[in-house]
Length: 620
Image (cartoon, rainbow, N blue to C red; front, side, top):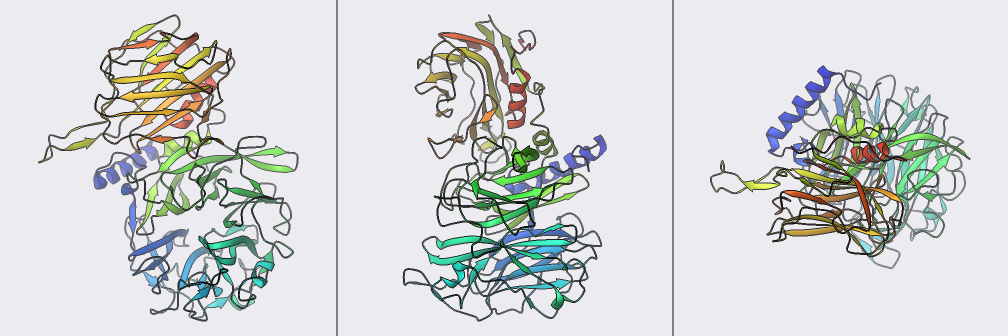
């Protein structure tokens, strides 16, 4: 299936996106308010999708009338025949009144049957002991791993609940119950390849600090579930071989959970999962999951820098075109917080010394909410007719979103794109220009005369400042580009200590600044920087030499937030180029929009190894 869309299909997609904006009033497809609601109760988690034999979407979701972990927690199934615009009445997979049943995943088979796997508190325990002698009353991550199935697209489900046999690991025997009670849950989508299916299971060896105090991954492999009509004859094998599951890398923490599986074209399995080490973890299996490579922190490619990610779901999906999409949160936190925005990176297979591995693009913002405390997580991905839909939850509502096709296409092409972005270009100037006229820049927020209170209208506008430059020295205080007015309005891109760039900006009322990751600049070397102010999520991003800042080893975040009260960056009517620089700015551009990361990388790649030719100086 091709990643690109034809003109007619793309037009229909854009019409649909425009309709969602009309509902929410937010002109940005990445804002979660533009998603279509999946109805649940007060708590909603893991809204996961599958296509049915009759072409409908089937969604299973964990919901409850209370909060997460409440005694009313249960699994429901819903159908949609219009791509998530409307949903059927929910069907409970278990009778009302408990015990707790939670964290469901779907496994569709070629014959049309769909299995739903979930946790079931079979003994109806009301509390569990922690490793430190305390107790938790939350009992939704223990008991039996079970399934039911549907043969009519989710309208009805098997009367019988079937239990999956799971082999004991050392972490089970060594828990406070000696293995009599087992703790586990699952969020990972089942993987189907050929006649085999794999499911992930996140075993918990100890309850305590952080709720789950020790965890590791298990894989359940079935060689006949896709073809066996008798559910009680389905075989399951618990992997990996031995007594230990997929854990954190040597020297890492005790947490290794929420494993997500995919398959490479040579048959290898790839698994990614979360830790509390500030990085996601990955491992490869070359023998169907029996043995796995030593766990390592996920990197952008062989010999590349590590991804940064907190204790949150991070999932990988193989797409119809043979490429991959990876969902994560792009910062080095170690706890459950800061899951907003959600980011995507596109993966491709590359050959390494040990076989095929995955290499990844610089990431893009996929979804966000205006409230940075809102946590967006537990997604699923569904492809249909070349379009990409993703679900998510903030633990309160489930939604389905259609991803911007340009965002996806840009990521898939990012590793080869070397074309300078043209849309929104306001100014392009080459050396020896020292000053060029600068037109009015986009207005981020303004008064809305159509409101009865004449309040604010957020235009979700953006701006990108770009430069190719060479520094003779790394002395702090050198200015690359500036439109600062005498009263401080406008922006300035300057050097600061540590081989770092700083972008300062003000509208005369509200000011802000952000720095690139330290140590990236070298004296005498040609560099490229794109400073992006994205007025959708209100983020400032710096892409230096084709690399989006992620904080590295110096700070949790490589991207920053700017005030939602910032009105714009208009200062003086001229862009001053290298007014006091020890070196030169050989090319400067100003865009009246926020470039995507992929576009900034493309601008960098267009000039690698040579001075970009550009165009004559533009004075719009």
